[in-house]
Image 1 (tube, rainbow, N blue to C red):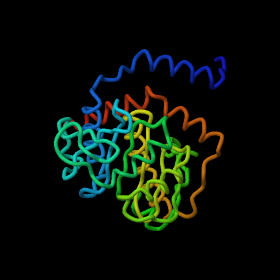
Image 2: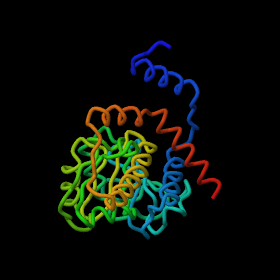
Image 3: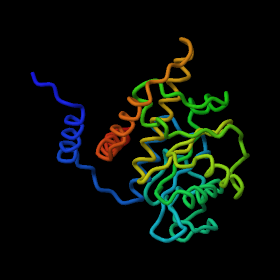
Image 4: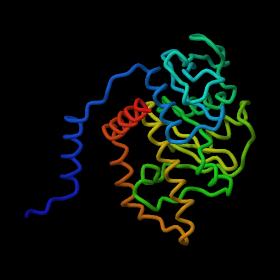
Amino acid sequence: MKLRARQYFDDRATREMQENLKPKERTLRETLAYACRILAMTGQEAGLAGQISARSDKPGCYWTLRFGLGFDEATPDDLIEVDADLNTISGQGMANPATRFHLWVYNARPQSHAIIHTHSPYVSALVAARQPLIISQMDMTPLHDDCAFLADWPGVPIADQEGEIIAQALGDRRAILLAHHGQLTTGEYVEEAAYLAVYLERAARMQVRARAFGPMIPVSDALAAQAHDYLLKPSIVRATFDYWCRQADRL
């Protein structure tokens, strides 16, 4: 049997996934509503703490779940469009005041079009202990060199200062662990931000559990970088999101 280079298999898999994995078309609000339900399904709700948003077509504006609802209750009609002063310009209701810090992240990261912030259980345990993420298992690698760490809690993020601090700490990474607080993920599209949010909570769960067996042993940077790029292929991200949507529909 002929041995082929890794690139051959990467290229072939990429081509075949593009041909065979056809993502379902949804409106932005439908996608956001599904993302909310996926977050709830994966145990990431914490009352009314946590938010989701996506840029709108209007400059400086974004769509978000109206305040007062939990992630599990979200429907497309519950998404509202707000401006930079958090005034509702489409839909009924008000934005979660804590989404104000999203404005600073969007301003600092023009490539990001969606933001998810949760106080998920294992992330919360990790950040309560003020611990950064250690990439030590394959399923953690979508976060390799892509998860920042903010060691000091700036307080409830309802003002502008918190947004500046979080955006600066995030830098050019897609995700961040916020000590004494929770997690934040961004994406070029909603599905990517949701995918990273789910995998960041899973990564934190693995880290908390693995600590019982001794020190964490990181995987090599080179292999983690390869896995990061492979597992963040849009075809994989969108197909995974579609699977989670089907799971949510069965609940």
